[in-house]
Length: 208
Image 1: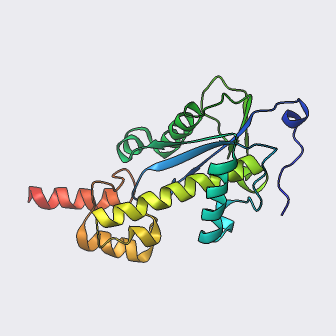
Image 2: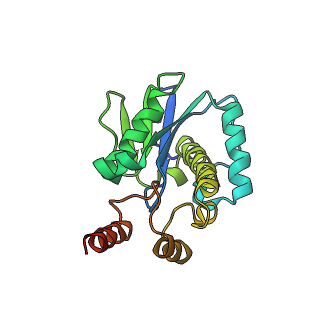
């Protein structure tokens, strides 16, 4: 599928255009991860699309090509503690800011997936479903997801029994069963239900 839609910013002659997207807003555990990518028109990456529409093998192949061929790329995180303190939207925007700050080149314009841009000084616009419409945002989507998925596999080794490597922290039936059986880990988001409900129940039991 051919990505890239006609938007005024492309016609304005910007050369360093970054795409920004995040992965991990919905899970009950783990950080939220954002990526920023400036593609190199001279070294196109074939097969870019919304990361959720690609198989794992295709995502990882695209991610490797992005790392090797992009003009610049960077990843930013917001921790579980920051998610619980700020809320998931603000933590996602913080991760995006950190990703853009990490770029080796300053973007002239930024496309952000979704409907909200961080409060920064960069010229930017939010694009609904940008990861399935713009190559640079699709690239950021892939880099963010592949990075986060790998980190969740690492957390599976630290906290076995929860299935993080399979569900990546999302509230699947298996995850909820493990959570009820084993209780929350330090990487579970206390501000998210049902983690908050379990924490409250445990506190009430301790007081009895």
